[in-house]
Amino acid sequence: MNAFETWIAFQTIVVREVRRFLRIWVQTLLPPAITMALYFVIFGSLIGSRIGEMGGYDYMQYIVPGLVMMAVITNAYANVVSSFFSIKFQHSIEELLVSPVPNHVILCGFVAGGVLRGLMVGVIVTLLSLLFTTLSVHHLGIMALVVTLTAIVFSLGGFINAMYATKFDDISIVPTFVLTPLTYFGGVFYSIDLLPPFWQALSLANPIVYMVNAYRYGILGVSDVSVGLSLGMLLALAVVLYLWAIRLLDTGTGIRK
Image (cartoon, rainbow, N blue to C red; front, side, top):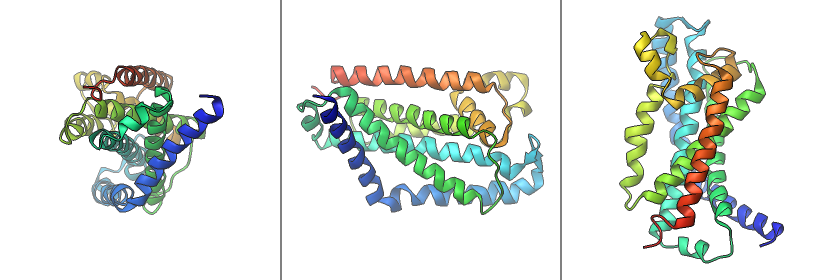
């Protein structure tokens, strides 16, 4: 395929993915907005008023970056894992595999769809947060880079999960037993500086800690960990997961019997 044909193939996959989640926006875009609004009310307004400040900011302001990242992570992951597993289950993946479309274009197309849904939900949650508090962007470049890389990482994670999955139950195991605990212990609702030394050290093994804190730095200018280290970890994760995903696609893991 020449460059133009490759671009058309990529664009077709992305448009299909975007149309898919926009067509069922009541299931894909509305629930995260309602969930995050509940977090803002319960944790921000009710509990936050008793906590006071954290990291030099009002508690509501402090948790907004973490809640935005939580929404981006879950939606980027969910979009790719559900979409790719669905075409496996329906056996329509064969149409892509027998086409001249390179595997890296297929992978990038699905990942781009997940990234767009994650970013769209992130924007919705950010706008919703402005009803409860005020935000000022400290570093727009870092904020945009972190949220985009995070969406890429978890879109790739969703793709890998879908490659290994053999039944619908398999695509809910990782979000339930891995993503949810890591997210809640990822510094979304608290500063890890408040933890005892042992738990601080343990928290540093959680990659979501770096994502949340780097994004918080982009908005508020405060972070519990080095922003440079966070960006380096995000880039490394994206590269490793991409190589893993493309290897699975090249070998047909979970697709070819």
